[in-house]
Length: 499
Image (cartoon, rainbow, N blue to C red):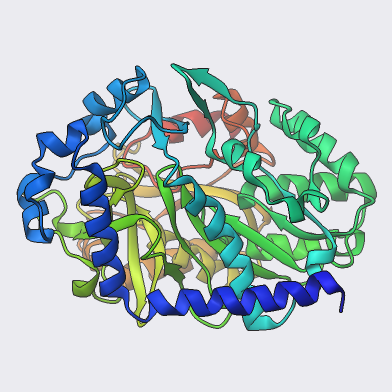
């Protein structure tokens, strides 16, 4: 064992002990965060407008601060963007993470001096938890690659702005700098396909041990490596041991990845966003990711099926239940208050608090009242893949409300297969049966002859990538929307359907 690996194991043990201190006292950890947030922001414009000085507990907070999404908070954010101080959080942000808005173009998410360290610490701690549990630290001696957006930052009224992954690239610890790839110059390439080709050239002869990124874009990197060498990734990188990912569920990609790699490798799931780093997989043995309860974020949860009611109940960590679909609401040391992140989660454990991401509150199919969510379609697809030995590159689902002729409406699945099932009809039936088993609303609609069983439209090889390129969203943090309640994405994919 190298000195570096030995030191990593000692460091991992110490960090793990610190994590356990708050993980074993979750309610107290959240109460401390809540009080610190309110006290820190009492003098801001938002704090004065919402009488933070009089907030002593969560009940007071509920009465004064309503749930808002970005659009509802925008009047405050716009002042911050204009360069004004003490609006949502004391002073000015260090950065704006620029993301794509759904209704109003670009969104500017503030990242402050208080919040920035948690983005870095959480990713580090995820790896350290892995080292502590598995005792495997040998990979720290090899090269590590993080497929991310360009680190080139612009400036707006004295505040730097860019993609979150590009901002984070400026904070890579010194002890990782020699191991980290690609080079800064390659990382700054904007065109994704050009960038991936350059990364292949830089890494192909290196001892890569850790690879990280959104699965769909890491898959492209792996495919380019295979095309160039005609070898499995695991043969090119014989010491490749760990895949770190976030952004989408890895399970639909797992069989394809294992085929590209040629063997199984351990993986760590992360739950980062521009708004904060919320959770990471702390164990290879347990289901779910550890919710970070001492990281400058106060959490509230609203049951997803009550979210659009007039006055839905906002729960704190002590009131949640395992297996219930919740919309996650956050208040943060970046100045977001009772902010609807848009993600839905489910708890897999409350001792400690572990979660899975179940979807987006706006990304569902309920054109007929079926309330189908991402977790359900992903689980159904995984069952079909395992039953057939098929593998996929990408997929999305949309309702077909007005089919031709006298057909009943149905859910249309657009799937790009890497390995097509021998019996496509049986594959579709397995998915449909699983959805009916998971979702009683969908079951009732199928059994009541309101919907017919789903149909699969096969997408040509590379079709999803071509589509993303056509709309200027190839690579980086961009990802395919799993579920749509309309046909906008479906219409965009029409030209790539195999007839």
